[in-house]
Image 1 (cartoon, helix red, strand yellow):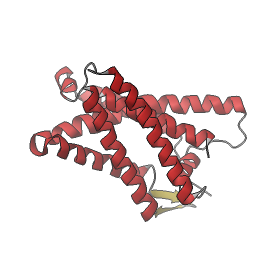
Image 2 (cartoon, one colour; image 1 turned 30 degrees about the horizontal axis):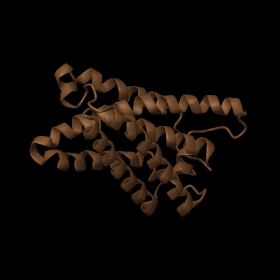
Image 3 (tube, helix red, strand yellow; image 1 turned 45 degrees about the vertical axis):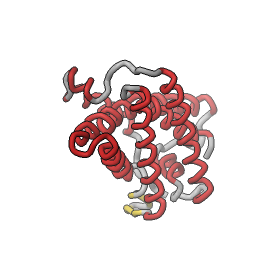
Image 4 (tube, helix red, strand yellow; image 1 turned 90 degrees about the horizontal axis):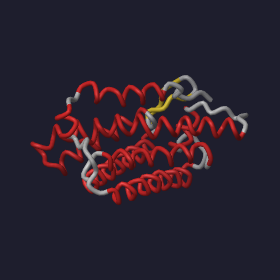
Amino acid sequence: MKYADYRFIGLIMLLSFIVPFMFLNKKGMKAIGWNRPKSYTWLCIAFISGCLYAYLLFLLGKSLYQDSYQNWYVYIANSYKIPSDLTIEAKRQMFLIMAGTGMLFSPFGEELYFRGIVHQTFVSKFGNRGASIIDSSAFALTHIAHFGLVYLQGGWHFLFIPALIWCLSMYFVSRLFYFFKVKSGAIWGAIICHAAFNLSMIYCIFYQL
């Protein structure tokens, strides 16, 4: 069975990390929360919460769809092109590479953009709550690219119910990212929660499926 190819995900993550620094000046970065956190306790809570959310999402997919391609983690795992004959050491090294890129580039780039630029754009008109709804909705919709609109056996398919669950999950985790941005007093809360989510998700893909 053929799946979409995610082998270049590291490059995409790298670009998403660089772009905000190219287009925002120092004042702009500060406006979106690029400053020293006010609470390091909330950063720790953000990390734990991100890990738990991703693991609960794994359990939900497993209970509903077992090991079928309708399980979001199964589909993403197959898209990673993880060889089935990897040695324990080679698998560990691949996991560390994927986890490292997943914890660095994607959380920085996506949080600076969604919880930063997109959110700040709508604050003056809709307030922080409304802006969070908008940036979370945008984040959820873009993640259909990861799962929902899937490439299987040479063609594209839209899995309505699994995609709906996945998008709602991405929406609520986005609200969680924003919650920790507020609690920590800096966008670092969102970045760390997002990084922890990615770490837990990748761990589930490598070692729980």
